[in-house]
Length: 516
RNA sequence: GAUUCCGUAGCUCAGCUGGUAGAGCAAUACACUUUUAAUGUAUGGGUCUCGGGUUCGAAUCCCGACGGGAUCACCA
Image (cartoon, rainbow, N blue to C red; front, side, top):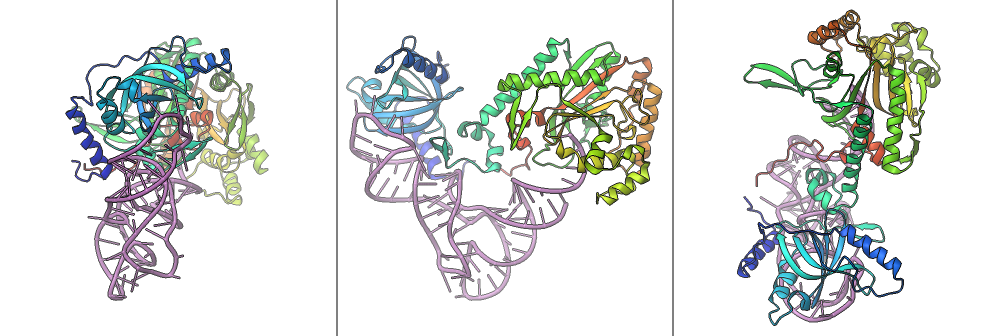
């Protein structure tokens, strides 16, 4: 351990001895009572300023006995006065530490040793004092008492800022993601993104709860990875001596609960897919799924657009969002178009009247990478994602998919060969996928068998058959509408982030080879 | 998985057609009782990711490995 310390790490460890000589524990056990946050103080002083224009502010009512704690972000020692900026859970605030205030008697050791030499950027301190405004107009705390709460032994990157311009940003993506704790401390805005994510999830949860939904938990370890087409992670249970999979979706379990008599269930499901990683894909990601009995996919469109409108409004106070170079309006209702019409609009080909080989020829003519293992459904999917998807910037429901690409979806009430399904596209990306759920057990069994044929044809993403799920359907499932919404992708939109790594605290990375 | 770019001090980066390393911040020391990317003076800090090769000589050129970014493929 700790064999290759750099000069700064050595210097900080030496300071531990300095604390010991003064009888100061740099890692005290006792709690530090906090009675104000930096944000509270800054806001209170702004209010006071507004009420007392032109006045020099030496004290502010209610902020004469502040006790606050935070991490030191900069130290500016000016002889017998030291300015320290600390950062608490809310924001940064300046401390005004003078030798006369913290070492009022003859003995100036505390100021000269602790304040001037033993403190470092990164240390946690607690201070008491009063709020005031300095000559240069910065709200500060005149410190009476200063206590070291935790000594930092490793130098933080120092990011400076002037007039909104960032200097020496801690910018290397690898370092930022591997050491997110550092990223969160030094890069302004990172914490805000994650707070917004939390707010988004809370808004959704409240909306669902207010509409009578029940939040549930279903298995992550599954013996049959169902509900989606994807390569699963496999693992092994020793006591049962059996192979298990990490879930790729929770769909089939939520439907079992609908069978069991819950009418409206939802789960924020952490799913795992053993596939490529990119700025839009992480091996584990979160999908919100919910299922509502006695509803259909049209009801679900109405419900979903209302929910997303509320999310946008709660997070931004408006439905008009800037996402990258685009302006996106989440005002309901969203545009609706069938997948066949979308393909016709962007390719000029009407595939609704074509059979598999004709669609194959269209794909070939458009230079898409297709092969003979692909069924009609996959070919249409290929056409749509290659030629149409990117065009749907404004929230749009794509509806009425061909039955071949939707093995869990109820057949369309009036259109032959189609199913009652929609995908929600925003900013050229799929955000949600919803159906009138297939509840005919015989039809479901046949659809699964179709999937087996696709698998035999070489489609390695075709679905497994879940016989217990079929058994559940045979007992009877009410007509049900269900949806899955990609929470990470939605969060990227709502926080205007271009990569999934920016909305996951700890995105997957190749393991680091740290030995000390 | 493919293509491509990158890896130099704690952080951000410079280092040209090969001649054994620089800056700013951070650190250390001193000065300064209202600073604002504080300032001034001085000092220390590097297995140039790793391993081979070419060469009298490699941070620099070549090969390989490791790690990362971007684009593509798969997918949400």
